Length: 67
Image 1 (cartoon, rainbow, N blue to C red):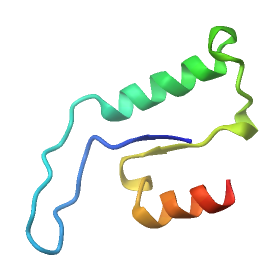
Image 2: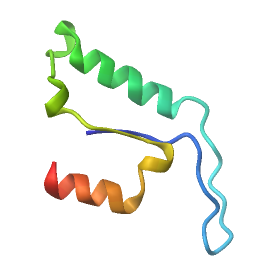
Image 3: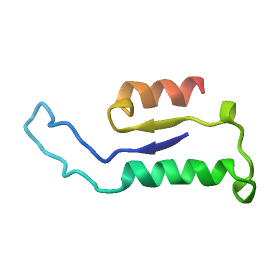
Image 4: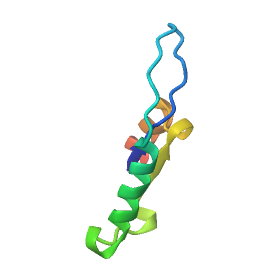
């Protein structure tokens, strides 16, 4: 599982986490490397990519327990 969050939503308490410029692109690049021969040729069915709005607490927790 590779997670990259560049864009954060404002929390209920009003706390703001600053956006990151490259976290989502870095995560995609990391997964691309893992799928390459040099990275171990990880198969599509053995990998999961969660980016930005798809990387919610619920989605990450679900992936940790089911993936």
